[in-house]
Structure formats: C-alpha cells, structure tokens
Image (cartoon, rainbow, N blue to C red; front, side, top):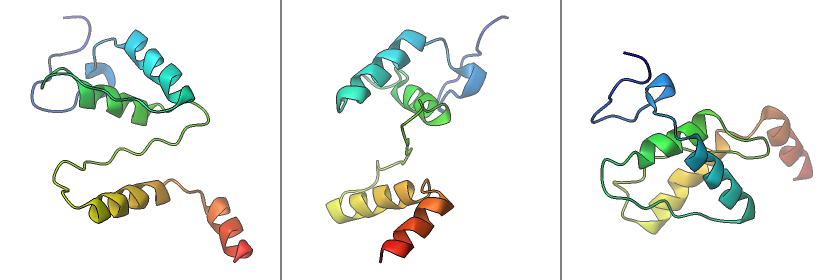
Length: 101
C-alpha cells in the first residue's frame, strides 16, 4: 500500500501523517500574525498536526510540544510551559543572558 499507514490511538508521526500540507501552511500563516485555536472533535488529528509543526518548525519559530492535559493548576501549567521553552534556549543565548546579570 502506498502512502501513510493508518495509525489509531497514537500521534501519527513522520511518514504516517497523511498529507496535511495545506492545513499546516495555513497554521504557519496564522501564527505569523498571532495566536491560533485548533479545535475539532476527538480523533481528527489535532495532536498529529501539532507534532508536525514541532518536528519541522518554520524558520524564526521555536515550537514547544508539551502535554498539559493532566495539569489543572495555572502555576503548574506556566512552570511546565517555561520548562519546555528553556530546553530550546541555545547555549549561546544562555551565556548572553548570564552576562547581562
């Protein structure tokens, strides 16, 4: 069979993600202007699309893929998000930030 296989129950990654190029390009266009809300019923591939953005970020973007489903406390949410962002900070950026202190 040509094309991606059917992945049920997990995030479809790499070649398993059916061509969603137009949707992904539209998301990047919207994100260049601000925020986006991706809303659809369960099992429509929202997480798979978001993971594709994470796997192949557009130049100038830092993409953090963080599972926050089980987080109910706003402080825990922010802490988790900041932790994910910090992992993307380059060593050079960390050094520059330390020099500014």
